[in-house]
Length: 173
Image (cartoon, rainbow, N blue to C red; front, side):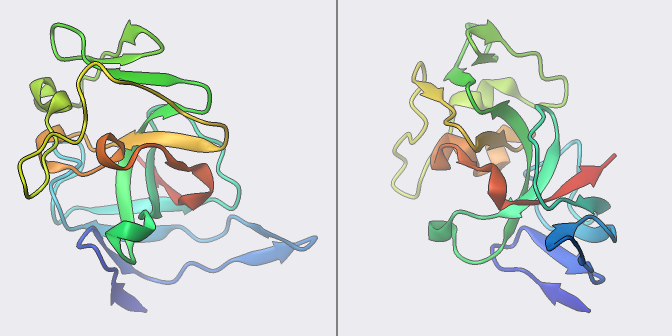
């Protein structure tokens, strides 16, 4: 089975099969995705094929790259981003050198192409949507995600935290 998923984020290939064990879904078959944007560059490049491990009950870990259902206002489809913060964390932009602050401490992100873009997220009316120096708390059961290419990614800087339950795959590296 091969089908494009809305939102221009990923192209799914193959079939992920779920089995039941005591009435609960479990991990079985890895799923392959073709990355269709540069929002995760340089870590994942447009056209690159990655493998995701199916998760039925995702337990968030900072640094995971996850495939998740996009927020409803983004339309149907999936996104692929890095988990920056988990339940109970706070995220703030930005330290003087452009680094995100996680729980009040500068977050070292060697995978980010240009950290000066942490504070830049614009809509079609050129209004800033992510307010620099605004601290955001991540509620229970949620995660805060961002693309590694901050200048080319729409993510939690716009959406806010997303439900951890929206995660379907963790990308294998």
